[in-house]
Structure formats: C-alpha cells, structure tokens
Length: 241
Image: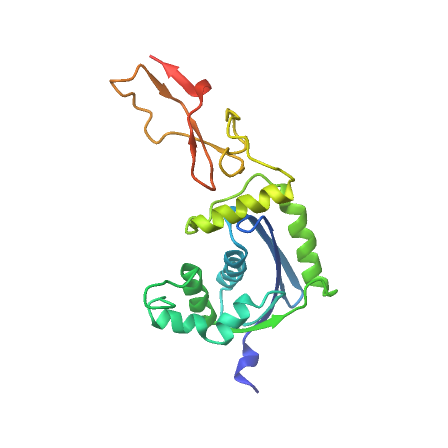
C-alpha cells in the first residue's frame, strides 16, 4: 500500500474576474472531497489578478485541517510555473529579492502559499480556459454573478504602483467610452467617481473628530478614493461650532 493512500484526496477548482486589472476582483472556489462539495467566494475592492490567484489557493489550503493529497485545477499558469519550477522557493531563499535591489512581486502571498504547500501533497493541473470543464465553468458562472456586489473587502497588503494606477485609469476610460475625466465635477457623496482616476469613492469616519482651536468647524466624515487615495472634504459633513 502506498503511504500516500492514507491521506484524504481533495480536488479544488477556481475562477476569478476583475474590473479592470488592477481593480475590483472576485474569486469563487469549489472543493470536492468524496461526496462532499463546498463553494466559497470573496470580493476585493482593489487588487490584481495574480494576487487573487494566490489568495484563493491559500484560502482553501488553510481550510484543510489534516495533511491531504490536493489536486488544484486552474486555467492560469502563473502559480503552476512559480511553484513547480521552484522560482518562488529561490526568491524565499534570497529573502524575497528577485534581483539585488528588487523585491519579488506578491512575496507576502508567496510566503504563505509555500508554507501551506509544504504541509500537504499538492499537485497543480492546468485546465484550458472555457474548454467545457464542468467545475471550472461553474466557478466562472458564479464569479460573474458576483460582479455587482458592494460588500467588498480590502487587500491590505496591496499597494498599487504609479504605473498600475495610470493603466487602470486608461482601461476604465476606454471600457466606458469616457473621452476625458471632468476635473470640475464636485464630489459630494459615497460612490461618486473620483476626479483623478474615476474610481467610486468611499465614505470614511475621521479617527479623531476632535475640534482644532483655530477652526470654528469640524467634519463628521470625508470621502476617500480607495485607488489613488485622494481625499475629498464634503461641505455637507461640516459642523460649525
């Protein structure tokens, strides 16, 4: 009897969507173990396709309570190549530097994934995109249905670069047939579009609403762009002393 036969065998399938990339991301995962089938999903305000691919794999591997034989099916070769060709492991041995002065991208997630992969017997399988694979098609369907949700969470370790901000803005304008951002539009409420990058703004509460002695007013809340971090102080939120 093969010693690996004593471990439970689990199949994991996934898919994800973005608007745009970088931008909002959704992923959906299906897990099979014997006759048990579980589905799990998550929605992020701002992240990238590669971070989502690593995140969903981490999410399900963390849910496994005992050492298992795990088959992961994905239509992307990003994770497969970096794990099976040992590139990620080499980065870790070099303190996550790809070159002398440049850190590996997404090393926070690679570190978690390598740790989890070492606890199980994981095999990655590449599935051709939209090639009729039933579980991957199901993930695609569920991820698409989730695109308009509002209860998105933060990818707290993702900090977009200047190039990523510019690319995302251009992609948004092109997709939505917007010729030019109107810099004169007044931002007054939650979900208005940021004047710099056209991302829906969020309402935030000040950490300390203590009034400054030199001012005769204070703000109950402000609006903030989750993408480019622009802050908008709202006249309607101003309270006079």
